[in-house]
Length: 485
Image (cartoon, rainbow, N blue to C red; front, side, top):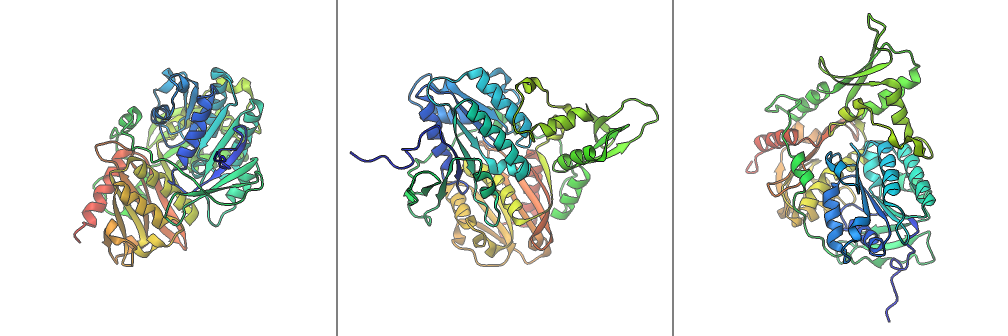
C-alpha cells in the first residue's frame, strides 16, 4: 500500500503560508484543500482577489463529488466585479483588494451566517501578494494577523497564497504568523512543479506536485458586466505613452476636506490612503460654517460623493486593529471610498519589485483566459530572460493560446518564434514598462499597466482595469508599432 505524500498527510487545521510563483497551478492545490473540507461537511471560505465569485464557485463545484457540498462554501469576492452578489447568501462582495477592512468584516459575516458545519472549517486566501500591491506589507501583516486570530477562534485551518519576492523580506515577515509554509517551485520547466514543507515535521525534501490541468473557463456573468465600455478619462487617439501617463495623472479625482477641525496626522492618513487611488487631498475653508469636517470627492468641478472625515478615517484604520469587533459588522463603507475605487490606480517612483507584482495582476488575467492579446514592453527585449521566472511565464502564456507581443530595443529573446516581436531603438520603448491585456470575444478581463522610467529602476505611471482605457492603449500600440515593422 502506497504511503501518503507529506502534503496529503497534513492536518487540515494547520494554518500555512503557501509560497509559489505565479501560474504554476497552485490554485488547484488550494482548491483540492477546500473541496476535501466541503465533502466532509465542513464550512469553507475562499477569499479571492482576482477571480469573481461566480467563476470560483463554478470551478469548485465542478471538482466536488457530493451534490450539496458547494452549499457549504462561502466566498469573499474582493475583485470589485460582483456588485450584484448581495442576493447570494454565500457571497460577500468587497469593492477592491485595497479594502482590507471590508474583507475582514465580510469574512466574519460569512462564518456567522454559514456556521461551523461538521469537521474542521477551512479557509483559503488568494492571494496576499495581490493585497500588498494595493496596500503595503505592514497593513497586510496586521490584516493577516487579524484573520489568523479569527481562524483560531473558530478552530479553522487555512492556506494563504503568496508569490516569492526576490530581493524582499515580505515572505519572512508574514511567515511568522503561520505554523509553517509550503514552498512550490518550477522544476526547470520539465515535469510537474515541486513542493517542500518548511517548519512542519522533519521532511525538507522536494516532492513532485501533481496538479491536474484545469479547463479554461468561459466568461462569467461578472466578466460580461465588467466589459462595459464606460467613459474614457483621457482624450483619444492617444499621442504617446508619456502623454497618456500625464493625462491620467491630470484626470485623477480630488478629495476636498471642508472646514477641517482635526489634526495633521489625520490628514496624513487620508493623503496616504488616497494617493494609491490617484486621488489628491486638499483642504478648503468655506464662507459658511457648514459642512464641517466633510470630505467631498470631485472630478473637475463635479462633486461625486461626500462622507464625514471621521467615518473615512475610522473605516481606513479598522484594518490596523489586531481584531475586528463583532459589533462593527454593520459598519457601512463610506460613499467616498466606494466611488474612489474606480479600478484605476497610480504608481509613483515604484521599484522593480512593485512593478513585477502589478504586471502579474495583468498577466494572470491573460493566462486564466488562455486567449486574447497581450502587449509587454520590456525596455530591452533581452530582459524577457532577465528577471527570475519571467521567461517561463511568457512561454507559458504563449503556449496557452495568448497572442503575446513583446516590445523593446533590439536584443536576443529565447524561443522568439513564440511571440510577435516589436524591436525599436526609439526612446519611448527604451523608457517604457507596460503590460496591456485585451481579452477576445470569448471572455476574460482587460487590464493594463503603463509606466515610464523616472530614475534607475524607478517607474511612475498607472494601472487600470477599465476596458475602454485598455482598448485605447491597445489601439495606440498597434498603430505605432505595427507587427510588420
